[in-house]
Length: 259
Image 1 (tube, rainbow, N blue to C red):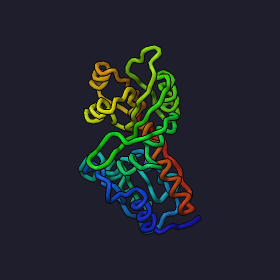
Image 2: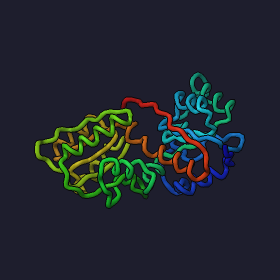
Image 3: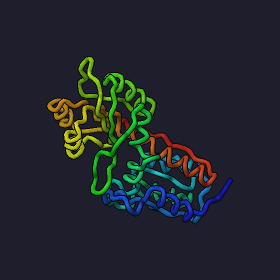
Image 4: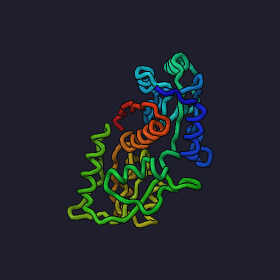
């Protein structure tokens, strides 16, 4: 088993994901969030930093945990109770934590959005879901039955720990302009952008009730494929890339939230 210097792995990830260049929300804190003694011999990947993912990394003998939603996602909290237990396990078992949120969402090869498009048989031609200076999601053209696209999305969601919900789909409707934004992708900004680009089918992880009302009023179909499910792809691909680059084993820790 190969031991990789943690600094080499972090440098590689920072360059691959352009961590220092990509804007994000304050609590994302992208990059190395917790160091270890200095080497990595096995990588675990998970969508969320949680008690379950920490316990899984420890159980599997991983000394680096790659996550999409990191240690500080829910904001500042006292280091006591579950927060203390997580930190205690990580430090005692010498497990480093690296998080990547929007840098991973928007990556052209390993990103949640481009990979979800591939899973659904769609070919992106442009970016979507603008956030400050970057496009998080993707969009493109197609000519496919919207019901068939929904079936593909349902199969994907079911195989990745979730389930599909949709706004009403009329018989015979076809998808010709689509867009994808994983996770909490149905927002006022993305719906406004969908209108600007003439999108008829929007594929997201989740959205509020009002987004379905908006869709009905604007001749838009929204496929809600699950926040968790749509964000399993990136961390899997990232861990596999690290494994190939540094010849270390990796494992994905499956902890669906049901959302």
